Length: 159
Image (cartoon, rainbow, N blue to C red; front, side, top):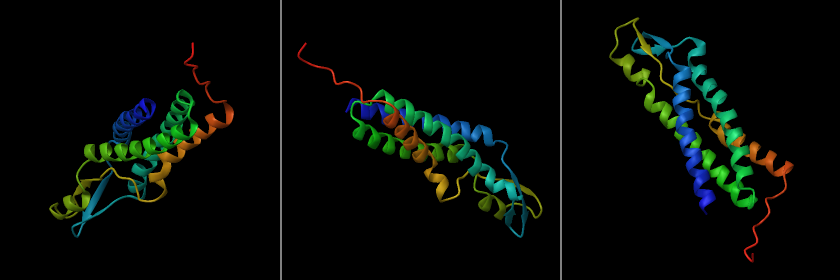
């Protein structure tokens, strides 16, 4: 039980750190031109935040899946479930921290902005497959450990 809690906490803290990294690597925010109270971004402006999220979440999830599954490989099923749940938490925390640090919603900013002025973009992940990157990478790491190592020996308490 302690191992499961440690895995969840590790994923939560690393997810928060990954969210700060996501925001830092994405900064400066892309700017949109306001036309008729609507923001218009360059084509890469929307992709950049999702791409940066994927570029951070995939390796972090993979490493966490590898390390934490190896650390608690005595009970593989419990650990795989803990890694899966923890990686979902980490992905959500990463998105939440990124949203907290990002500028305000450009739609709302554009409503009060002057015509042809610029408003900063918002850090966000497009719905869909990108949300699954953290859990997928973590499960890939867990699978790699489970396929390449033997379970840790159970300590004998009769000593």
